[in-house]
Image (cartoon, rainbow, N blue to C red; front, top):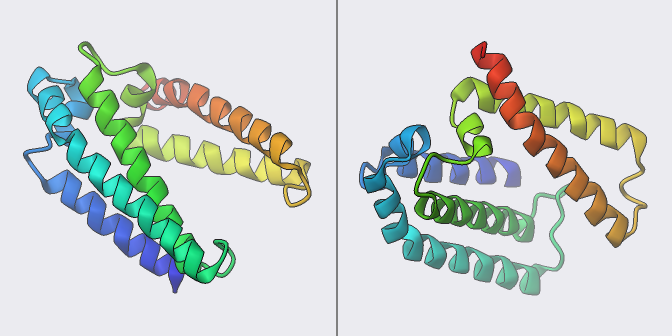
Length: 169
């Protein structure tokens, strides 16, 4: 039930952001227009408040019910996922507002629907490789952080390459 709740929350937030013409998300991702950057700057405080609320809700849920459990998909886990996603949306908002020229190659690569799917599938394959090669439940915190950093670097490096491959360029 928890995963279904997370999915429904994500869909609702995504639809709200994509349909809000004031945010200019679609145009900002495709062209990085100056007006869209100005709107991104204007909406950054709102995104920061939403992220702060989500982080506070995750902390409260963890204090009330214990550590998040992905397997149980309990309330602490669902609120942690919501907080994580809110922080990612805030980071995206800040990046959109900060760049005066075209978006960085990674964001340009992920702005196309087919490139997002290709990157998602590549990340899933890489996740499978990591899970087959490393006993992730027994890895220490430092090694897990290093493994995650390497994993994210690999996925981010593959994004622009996959975008060119998918678009035929």
